[in-house]
Image: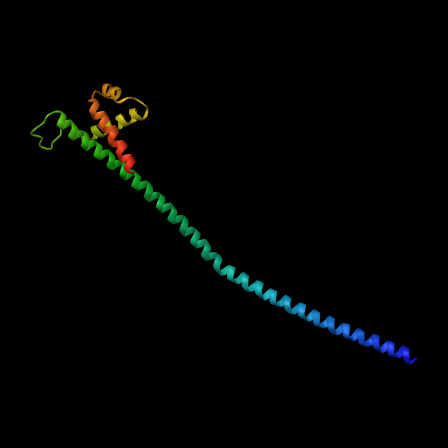
Length: 160
């Protein structure tokens, strides 16, 4: 019986050893799980703090982008208005030179608004493909004046 008692004691020692190893493994697993939970919780807290900042930054960027587009459109409108006025002034000077006014005192019999409207008509007809000679006949103005308006507009568009 001593042999079976020795086997029984050996089996008991092996089972105790197995249980100790199992307990140690379970403790390590629980400890690792707790660390991962703490790490996940910390990460979630950081994201919770950063998310409002990112949302606000995105909204600010969108507002800034809209303002830039509005400013760009305003600049384009101002450039177009200035181009039209420069062309109108050049037309008036060209007419004064064509008429041979030597004592030109700066006063114009023609309304600047009508010059502006005439310039719009010239450019509109030109966009439709009408030749400068045909535009001049249709609007009853000199062909050189029509060409001047078209060339000035082309030059201003190249500069922009």
